[in-house]
Amino acid sequence: MGSVNPVTRKQMEELWLTQRTAHNIFVSAAKFLESEESREEEIKRTVKEVLEASESYEILTVTGDGIYPENRVDFKRYESGFPGGMDEMTGLICDSFAEITCRVFTYNSSFQGIYSSGGDITVAICRKFHTAGLCLLDEVLPLAAYGKFLKGDFEGVSIITKGGMVGEPDAANRCITYLKEKLFM
Image (cartoon, rainbow, N blue to C red; front, top):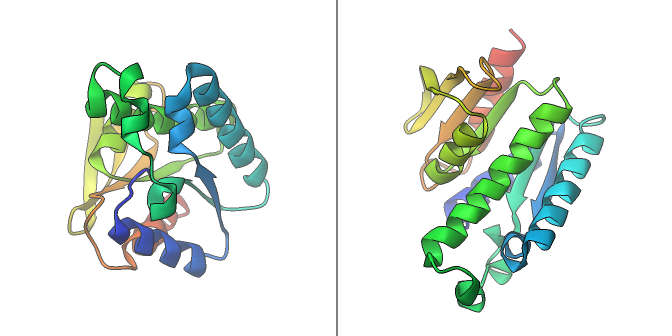
């Protein structure tokens, strides 16, 4: 979850409270922008935490710390290093989330599904996975679809993708519950 939208924050907080087997790792989006070294350190730290936590938890969430207003990135601070402006910066943040996802799936083949909220992050994950697309199989909620990756490095992996600004506070929880049902049928 890279969204800074209050709707997403409520949904994630509900998920963390409801799913007893869930563990969250916060990432600093600012570290993705500070330097390539800082970005790589944050990616490695997050991947390490996810892999370690996977021994004890069934659901692992990686969430940008900007979900809380006091942690939001001051993009003006980084403008000079990004000639492409806001698009380049947000693209790098999405790519960093995708890189974390790709490394986790590469290092631990027991991961079977992804819940992604927000089109930009979902597209970045698809690119990183070298997928040809998603085979959409069902609508979980309005603007939340269940499917599988087509072709690419992780063909057949299940995904639920949901629009970042849609859904009631229980939307993420409902999507994760649905994904668990599909994975463990």
